Image 1: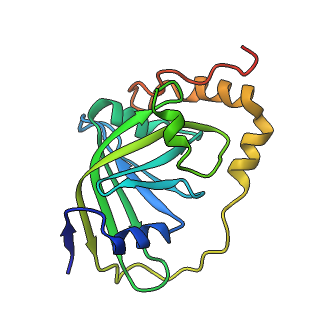
Image 2: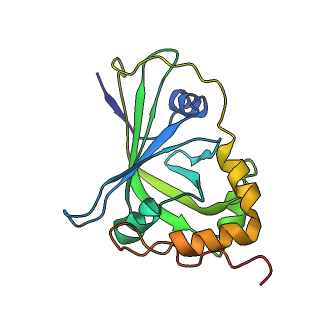
Length: 188
């Protein structure tokens, strides 16, 4: 039977820290808009306090999460056990986008392992913390992180990533605003 929690207790924190994968879901206000669900990994998640979490938003092919959060701040993060005892944890909350120009960005960035290609940090104030059984989640074995994203970022270099963010980070697939201040070229 599922349960709700007032804060991220030690058991939940330990569970979250042991996961290699989490999922992020957001939606626009418009019923005609597209719901977004994204898998995340690469050791990009941090618990900031009992009711606040954050994750690194790495450069990618879409900007839906950022666009939706700018419009309405609604977000849910889901983590599920693919090994060990079955468990699903959902973190519902209000998210905010901290781009590199945000004054708190450098201090929050220090809470994560180094990653190239970070376009923002998503910070979530939790409004509902819950778990459920996870009996239907299959067992999988974690082998390793995929090397493709870090390799792609390295090949593009700072100027290439900045250009990519300017080209693909301005608007969501539904036309909502995305990045407000994409990275300038490194040579600027």
